[in-house]
Structures are given as structure tokens and as C-alpha cells.
Length: 135
Image 1 (cartoon, rainbow, N blue to C red):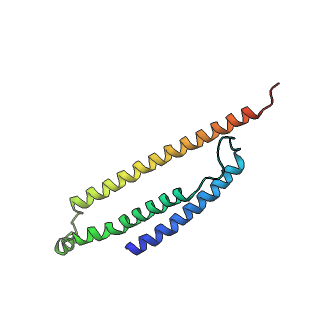
Image 2: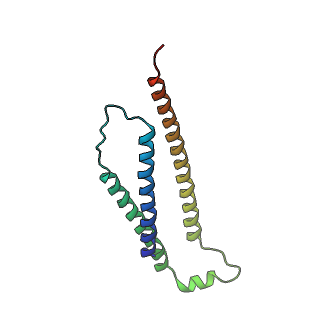
Image 3: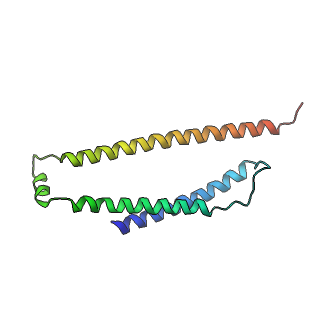
């Protein structure tokens, strides 16, 4: 599971970094740069943070099933699979907390995307207003 999660995270992280480079170029072509910014900034620190976060999350996701499997009691697991038995309280709690975390992250990402789009639109409007000739 660990190797699989590392491979999937590497593929997803590479695709995300590539999309970030392409979108960065697209935004730079469409939005004029203010005269006070430097054009020669380095992307390496951002890429290092991206890869570090990718590796940490991949290892945590890969190790979590192993930790749950190591604590399992086989007799209890066989009894739980019997007809008429429900899932244990710990599994229900873990599942409900993961769903709650997923919903919370989705809401945060949705608000962040909305704020990004609204600030981008405001920036474009302010740049368009400042570039109009005075009458």
C-alpha cells in the first residue's frame, strides 16, 4: 500500500505541478505585470514545498491501512462479518470523522476558489480602469 500510494501521489503531484506551470504562464500572458515586480523569481522553493507535502501525505495515506490492519483481532473480524452483525463503534467513528474532514476541506476549497476568482476579477477591472485614457 505504501508503494502504491507513493506512485499515485507522485503522478498526481507531477500533474498538479505541470498544471500550475501552464496556468502560471497563462495568467502571466493575460495579466500585465506591475512595474515593481521582478520577473526572475525562482520556482524551486515552491516546488520543494509541493514535493515535501506530497511525500508526507502519501506516506500517511499508505501507512494508515497498515496501522488499522495491525490492530485487528482476527476472531473479532470473523464475528463481525457474520450475518446480522454491524460495524464496530471505532470503525464507525473513524469513518464518520473522515467524512466530516472531507466535507470541511471541500467547503474550505470552495470558499478559497471563490475568493481567488473574485479577487482576480477585481484585479482585472482595476487594471482595465487604470489603462483607459483620460478624457
